[in-house]
Amino acid sequence: MKKIILHIVICLSMGRLSAQFDSLQQMSLLIAGNFVDFQVDNLGNLFVLTPDNQLKKYNASGDSLGVFNDVRRYGKLAYIDVSNPLKVLLFYQEFGTIVMLDRFLNNVNSLDLRQLGFYQVTCIGLAYDNNIWVYDALAGKLNKISGDGTLLNQTNDIRPFTDSVPDPDLLIDQGGLVYLFDPQKGAFVFDHYGGYQKLIPLKNWRYFTVINKTMLGWNGHEFLKYEVKMQTEEKKQIPAYFLPAVKIIFMPDFLYVLKTDGIHVYKN
Image 1 (tube, one colour):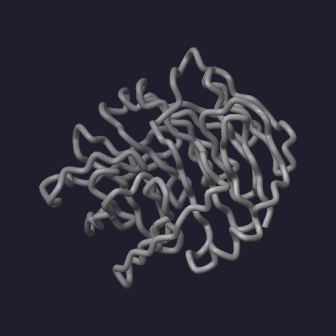
Image 2: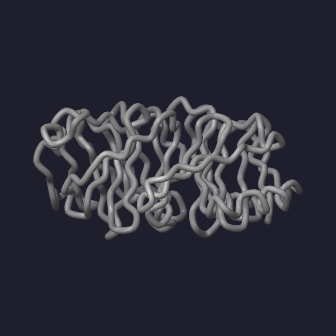
């Protein structure tokens, strides 16, 4: 899994953070365990990854809903996409493989990206229409494929059109745009057809997400917000009682904090 000390997804406006933090100091649930990563879908289900690469699913009450442990076939899991709770995507970068799971964590299908002609995929993500975006760094192309691997759309090599060669590790399709996030350079922005628009430089951002065209992330000790329309950046200190943390996910009604003893859930 990517080397992330603190990984933050904020689904609230920055203006509400202070009040939300004040009301989130009481922990409502602890899912105990040794976990290295997790994601939360929009239904409140948690998808947690153990050190031996086993993926487990819990509901909002902490009850176990399923396990996916076919780890020997695919190797180390690089990314979990739970944008659609009914279609979970697992990306195994070392083997160039995407595995699609249903809501019970049953294997629905898998795609060998190298067999499809993509030889250096650095990030994938679910598209707004439930197809899959794939960025091939070797070819410098953004591709959209269906669940069976059919190529639906492919851009030209985008590198001649950018001032800086992208090396992204995260892909987000949100609000009518596609974002490739490069931790060293910022967010490369595309339209839904894969047409390159611009690079938004985000200095010292270690994680990135987009909510209604507002960019959110962190720099190790502060929450960061970038308003695309106003081209302004805001910062908010991370409260000390949430640290140290391996990962934090901020949802409208809950805050999820991964620590060494498990996932702490705080209800607003």
